[in-house]
Picture 1 (cartoon, rainbow, N blue to C red):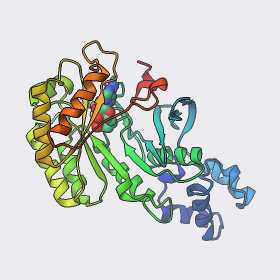
Picture 2 (tube, rainbow, N blue to C red; picture 1 turned 90 degrees about the vertical axis):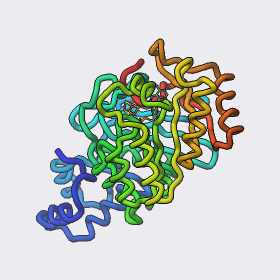
Picture 3 (cartoon, rainbow, N blue to C red; picture 1 turned 90 degrees about the horizontal axis):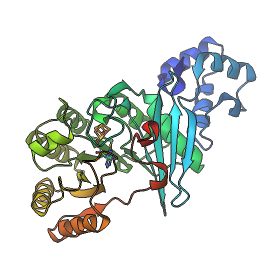
Length: 339
Ligand code: SAH
Ligand code: SF4
């Protein structure tokens, strides 16, 4: 069975028409789906005739996800869902709340082909791409939880977004429509491990979505130890693609950098990182590596703060990601695979 949000509008119109329904039913459906209720079942859609609701239920799934686990961090209110898709695969979605800002972190694939060594999502490789509806409904989960529209969407959950670009773009364009939740493009960030053709294709779409590059290493040799698969591109090619993205979209790049004790946190490595950030006009987001692998431990918190201070002294805008949802395994894939 298909999911409702995977059915193009025209197809939905003709389906309802073939059932003898007036054209305004599509608008009614949309209103239920995209607010203020963010409906996930036909039963909630009380102004649709019962017979129509029954027919829809037999033909199209109203929501692409079935939540099988919901965890809330009592300290910071972070919510993490493990959801089952219609084919039984599972994915994760995280809602992060800080004062005055809500952010949902969405997955784009089941598993991931890139297989970075510290990442739980990539542990078993790629299973499949998510569909447009499966991406949108993760955002809807967050809206349902909040009872209002979420402020920001970060595409930093399971999977490599630029290896599922078509579905991602359809989903983000739909969410940006005033007929759905009117999500501003500037409130969207897409994180990539550095898929060069994807970064270039994204740039050419000229949507002002923010781009984040998961850099993690300052030279190709060390990076090959972190991303040991054929999906790793040479750094110079990645940098050129990021510059192209900035030229076409005018958005500032973020470099994500997982700090790994003894591997990428020396003073000389951080100097090189600062030089790359300056060259790309990028800010840096340091992430203490959060993995059980013995060679992927985070430096002490004091050392992480020293790295942050060093970058700032070098004239680079930098942040240290304070881990939200520490108590509920919030790094991507960690709930699904329980590492
Ligand atoms: N596939 C994309 C987006 C998803 S991962 C990408 O790699 O950019 C989002 C971010 O979390 C990436 O920077 C990723 O490298 C980082 N990450 C994944 N697992 C991590 C872990 N165990 N510890 C620290 N950072 C991690
Ligand atoms: Fe894939 Fe990103 Fe995980 Fe790397 S960090 S394996 S690219 S999801």
